Length: 303
Image (cartoon, rainbow, N blue to C red):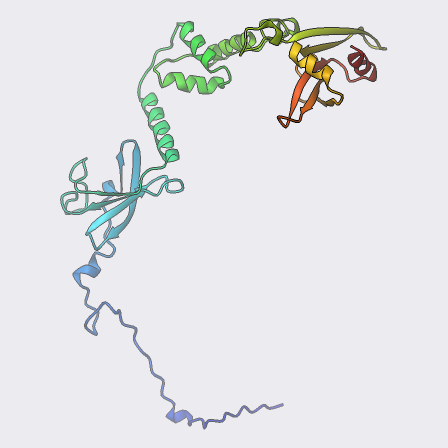
């Protein structure tokens, strides 16, 4: 099967077809022949091997591009993902014939933008680690300095405590830091039930009036199972204003939480009442329960 494609225009014979090849010219060139100008030769100008980066304490910069307009090199902060600072350094007065720095100080450079807080923090920590690696700090034998620091920062991790003290030229072994942290935390956050619910911890921090101190009520219910025999303990915490407010209201809002219950207890039961004038739910009682049985709940409500 043959197909013929005809055009409305007449097609010239193959002998009359002329193909024209045009040479693309650089618009910057004035003449037809390729003759590089002085400006074109500097388009790919780069600094020397030892001048591709430099440091302005505590920041570090790396080469970005050549600036033909100002005849200089542009450098940018190495933390380019969090910082957009640029420094333009002119060739005159700063570089020699091989484009190496003439001296450690820059002349007539231009800084664009300012360093971000994250960039500053990152570079300061980097410089601190470099300084620590370059100096030898003897181990400290005075445990009082370590204990004082841990008391001010009881929730800081031991490894971070070690770094923070090293920045103060205080060096301690990690195992010593861990022992002090455990000792301080046991004093501030005791695990012993009797100590936790004592008057040392169950008191108001913003008032010396004893009526605002937490009242502790303890209920012990016999627990007899196939495996164990003991008591089901309930520790109730409230103060006098909380109990008076709870007794004056007809509606209580009761909720129990399990995940934050301290060691030795299964759940924390919270009772709140709604105060329409303030538009808030006011906590009136907290009960720490060792078990989640129906009998324990009934004894608590009767109490």
